[in-house]
Image (cartoon, rainbow over all chains, first blue to last red; front, side):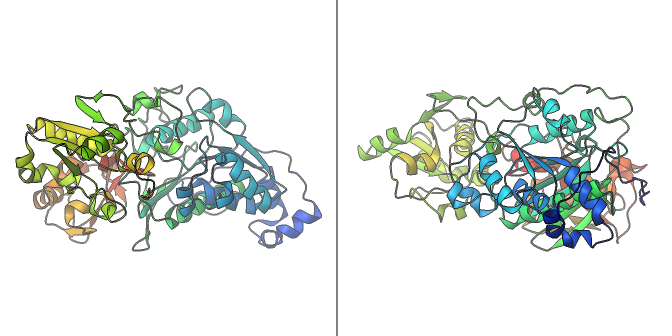
Length: 414
Length: 100
């Protein structure tokens, strides 16, 4: 154990008998073996290590690939999603050939292709309070590459409860964060963020844009931390939060402290079992098993009325427009989205709507159909308009994506 | 002092990633920030005036929660305040407040 400047000793993994390396493996890892910080023993530790990647998306892809390249002996993958073409802008472990396959199956192909000497354990499931502890027990280190708050808290709590370090990475547009949580001496995720944000009122469709390289950068930082934890070398990010701004290429670190009052890892923990994280985050449980990546979004189902706003289907809107009914269609997306694809409707971004209601005054009693990309923001906008006194407002269920799907397949989806 | 604005909030500071404000303490600097950029107030503070729980404030490299005087900590011109919201892939906590 080495003492760090901020008094966080590098955590060590449990002692076990180290596996031998074949001649082929020695050749493969030669560049590691000749590094004094790794050597034969280090490489054997990597082979003995069992790391769980939660999520095989933007962060999980580079993370898993580099761990495989490094010779981590067992990699577990948790994901129940399937590969979609829009993933390939950043999820480099998948390929055009595997679009439509389960992500864990797709990832396995690339991982085994890179390193046939490793074991890939596929957990084709959503990580939940019911299965997390059991899944985690078989691994030494957990690498969290998920993108919703419920799973962040679930992974954190499960790591603390099972005593496994959490190599954490998260991203948003151009910025990333990385740290190592849930070591015995160090802070956990809840020490930094005790409470989750309020439920996702606005779906991630606009905010979900991300520069493809960003999870690459952060995922490899996570992989680096995993390797350092396995080898017991260097100074890990325990007790530090690394902030990455890819646009300015600024990196900085902030100090993190273990909160003695932390409900999970503090001196008097009150959370001693996994809880209902959807409830904790105020999220409705998904009605169908959907991709992990959109688990946070409220499913705006195609019901006649949702929260007081009538929902109109794309077919019904087309029928009414073709019949020259007097309808005002309002687009509440961002201008850059309209450049991708548009229905030709006047555009007022949702964020600007409160300030620009005057522009819509002539439509006060007219039938207004609000649309966005997939129906979430427009629902919010419709409620705003209704509360402002507009008398006949409807939400286009499924948004312009549903229109591209069902009415005009020549339109691009994004 | 300089305040570093995270990506999700730059829309409310005219795209600026750092702003310079006057103030003798952390609290005064934040007051000046929300006075200059009123849209920020709702994103940083609850209606009751408390800092939102998924937002962390750092004075240089220290979390203000762990400074003895917290928001009353005196600051120098050369100090920097950084706002760190929790992020998780596609969504930033702070963007979810768009219409609250």
